[in-house]
Each structure stands twice: as structure tokens, then as C-alpha cells.
Image 1 (cartoon, protein in one colour):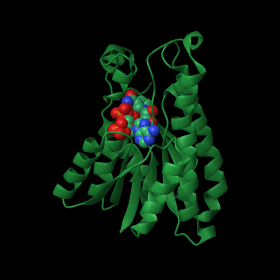
Image 2 (tube, protein in one colour):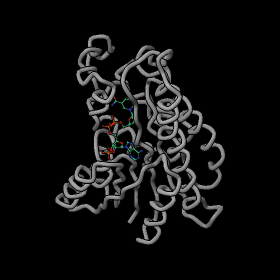
Image 3 (cartoon, rainbow, N blue to C red):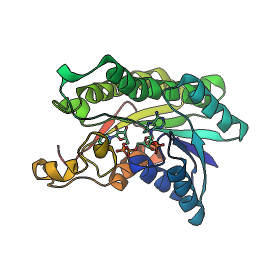
Length: 247
Ligand code: NAP
């Protein structure tokens, strides 16, 4: 059975992705940071639907914890076929002149370093150069990488710009080794993340300015992620899909 690891699989886009991948026959490793109950709920839902899943705690910004998470997958005999680098954070809306080094570094450590570390560990296991069977990686970026998110979170937007560059560079490094690396840039999606930015109703506020006049659902992003992981996208690598209602 193919195994997929979804970082931040306990809530929002990661949760929807974990459920869809399980429905499509993957065994899903549902990574979470702090909310064990939310991750266990996703696992229980997958089991109810007849799928296979387990939760796995790790702070992706912590190298030792990332290494331990992948070693746990190895110990369980999981053949890692898909990695979804979905976990990401942002903090309260602010302009650049208000940002502290501590905040910027925390955002970069999770969104950039964490994504790099998970890619590194996955490539070691998937690469045909190292005896692996190949695989696919999807990095969840953001439309903010294109817009810059002024007066909200330029630090977050810049971290997603770095993720896009990682997607491009890594895809070229491993294209000949059986691994495809792609990205998805969601627009405004109904999840808890906007509350972390201090504006729970943000999606509804901006909806009139989105060409499609609505925010997106996590499931709509999950389908793009799943498609990129699937054999339907077998000749696609280094590509980033904008899933942002035309924005
Ligand atoms: P969310 O609802 O806030 O959920 C975040 C998830 O990431 C949770 O499962 C959380 O785990 C996990 N997480 C946070 N920090 C982590 C860490 N250090 N290590 C491991 N897991 C961690 O977020 P979301 O809105 O679904 O966003 C998912 C991805 O989509 C992010 O990369 C985000 O930047 C991107 N995105 C979102 C939107 C949007 O409008 N929502 C738009 C563009 C891009 P716990 O449950 O344990 O806290």
C-alpha cells in the first residue's frame, strides 16, 4: 500500500487532503504539531470510511523531530510514495515596519526550513538513486507569494516565495530520480488560519474582490494536490497550480 505523509494534516487544507488521499487508497500519516485530538479525529474518520491512517506528532521546524518522524515511518514499514508539505503558519496582520526578527524567524523556520527538511527526508527515501521507488511531493504555497500580502504578512508571503523556489529547484534535482515535485498556491480558503492572523472573517471580507466572488473550500485545494500526486500528472514536475478563484 502506498503511504502519503501530510504535514499539518490535522486541520484545514491538510485535513481535507488526508481524507481525500485515504479515500483514494493511500495509507495516510497525519502529521500535527499541537492538536493531537484534531489529528486523531481525522484518523478516526478515515478508519470509519475503511481507510488506513495514523497520526504522527512533529514540529516540522525542529530538525530532530522531522528526522524522528521519518524514522518512525521507516520502522512501521511504510513505503513513502507521497509527501504533502502543507503545514504552515502566519501571525497577526502587521506592516513590515512592525515585524520583529523573532517573528520573521519563526515564520521562516516553519514554512521554509520545515518544508526543506521534510523534502530532504522524503527524497532520501524516494529517490531511485538511493534504491527508492520514486514518488511525488506537493508543496503548499500561497497566492501571497505573488501578491506580497502588504499590511498583512509580508513575512509569510516571502516564505511562500521561498517555497516556490524550492519547488522549482528540487524538481530539477530529482526529475531523473523518479520524483516529481510540484506546488499549489491557494487563494483565500475557509480555514482557522485567518483567525491566527487576527481576522477570522477575512475570507468573507475579501470575497467580493475575488474574480469568482467567493472564497475556496479546503476540499477544492485537496483535489489539486491529489491530482498532482497522482499518475494523471505523470509528466508534470516543477509546476505550480494557482487555485485562487482567478485571483
Ligand atoms: P490551518 O487550518 O491553520 O492548519 C494548520 C495546520 O498546520 C495544522 O494541522 C497545524 O497542526 C499544522 N502545523 C502548524 N505548525 C506546524 C508545525 N510547526 N509542525 C507541524 N505542523 C504544523 O492552516 P490552513 O489554512 O489549512 O493552511 C494549510 C497550508 O495552506 C499552509 O501552508 C498555508 O500557508 C496554506 N495556505 C492557506 C490559505 C488559506 O486561505 N487558508 C491560503 C493560501 C495558502 P496543529 O493542528 O497541531 O496546530
